[in-house]
Length: 364
Image (cartoon, rainbow, N blue to C red; front, side, top):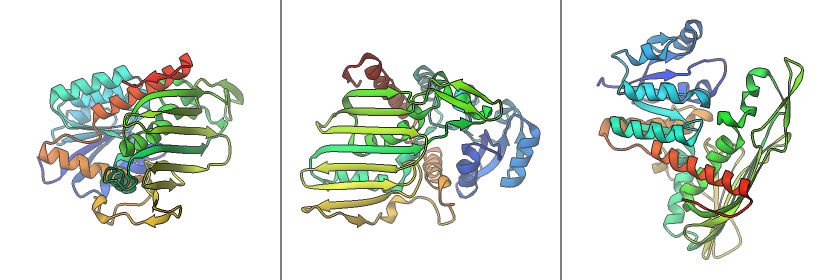
């Protein structure tokens, strides 16, 4: 392997998508990696990306990129229905692979990719960036070290503003079968952050609802039916005995941001942000022995990236790339890996089942 890990990015379009907002600037600012190649579906857009981010190679066919001898690792940042095939191809080519969340369109896809990656012995990482957020890493350790004592109850909320009018190239997310919606993405990141901090659920009762059952396509001038959920309510019990609740929603207008509250016998911890927890900018407050919250400073040991890492969307992605690079160099397992993604996929399935059957469900 070269001095730097040579990375190929699948889904490197610079005009839209998560890659241009986060992955591409994060890789460029990561000293462990060289952005060796970029791939899109058209050579014109691949060449645009190559020039903007300084990659050496551009491809319009990811199979050709995977066959190139100068590629050590691959990042897959595409629409969720398209995660499976390039991820499997990367594993088959013996490349280490970082695939965005949700790992698969379905749990079955995620399970298959996990089994293939484990059998091939390649390092694998899934884009659950809240697990690399410095504030949430510190929050997890505060809970583990007894800041609040025995956890009695916790609550998480993420209410985002969602548009009822969209162009037709964005209305594909209306189909819940394609795996990219408020339940899988916004709720997935939000509940995963809570699980990382306080532990897994043992039982849940839920409501998974589609409140806006139509969107208006501005370029076709028509209403289209929506099956994807936009409001998710969860109440349940954690494996440690605490009670927990969550409300994650995409509502038409005002965004009220992110809130996590953890209440214990000896104290309280609160995390807030205007963004989702997989973005930077989470602030922490705590209280022990009184009802007065005070700000908590996040220790530097939870920051892995250099000062040059762009703030905003690239920051926690950069934190992930640091861990991905460390895993590739050392041969140790990545976290969060594909197996962690499968656990979250299965938990989301349990939440859907509880809603469909209108009963409490045990989480396996």
